[in-house]
Length: 78
Image (cartoon, rainbow, N blue to C red; front, side, top):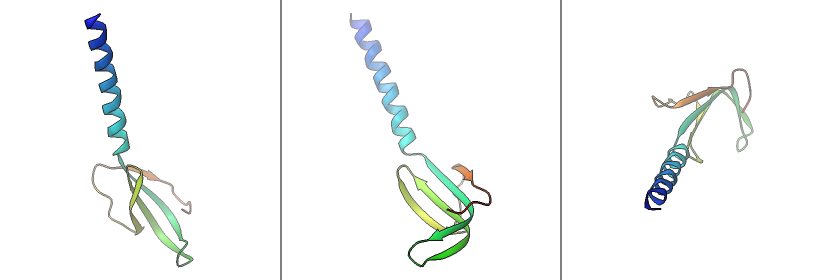
């Protein structure tokens, strides 16, 4: 019984730690254009940096941190 409880506790901790890591992941979205709803302008070479569930940087040719997952949307408009 103790072994089973220890095993289940270990599995729960492992699953929780994986979900925490996924929530903190940083990704960069790149697109040919990005629509700025505030100024109603189209920005060329748009980049959006998302960290976890928050947008942390947006703009044209924003530097992309090393090691982040990059999703290149090609000729799309964000």
